[in-house]
Image (tube, rainbow, N blue to C red; front, side, top):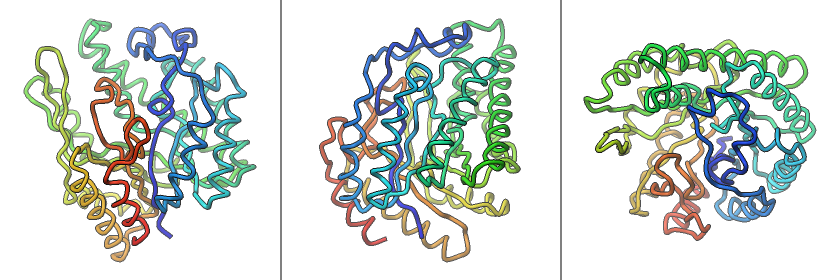
Length: 358
């Protein structure tokens, strides 16, 4: 069975809240400033998604549990538990992400790592009771670490590019170590399938980003470096085609160019690792709803074709169900098939038929 559904993150759907009081790492305070949104966790925000997902003929849904919310208020976990119960009751398989960019410090700080391990163990304990099968441990660790690198340079936290690189690399390998610890206790006590997901979109940089261009080119040619193959059960791919970055008057912009041929190249390279593959995100930032739906259909047909050729593709998730906050670009991107006010776009009906057919 091919899982077909949507992806979203707690940070981007819920907003944030009293974030500054939680941050306990001085580096984190300077590198990753808190989001200036103060929103409580309303259960209806999730409960109302159930009828939308069933109407869309989705049989899976990927979302994250907020690590900062749990640290502030452990009872907040119950909202996600109740949501998972409703998903299961409606035959929608939950894919739960532990970390999707929302943090209260840097993982290279042992205090943060220990808190995240505590959080992971509690989540595993609860998900096991609910018969959840799939867990994404970390979403795009390399992108997250690269963001720390760019922020360290932007705010002049580091004396040099080399110092910034050391901070970013230390964070990335701290995440790898954490993932191994999580994998080990998962295999000891549970039977979850753990997925590590990375953004394999092809970055294109203008002349102001030569270092990032050379770094990304080197990394993207070595998927063994991107995925901790020995400590995951499946490979997650976040894919948006080409992403062109430009900078004008200190404003960073990026533009997407969708390409299935590049996704094909990625799948060919990953097949040799003989692990299940999930397209944990693919999306199109388009206002033309017909073209958006047409490309979603093309992607599903392409993936089904690859499955027939023997590729072990188990699931595909469109990003995103709803227009959401996209970090430094705010609400200016339009990936969703629902507006940020949860009103269906024209692509909603197209996608409903496509998911039913495929």
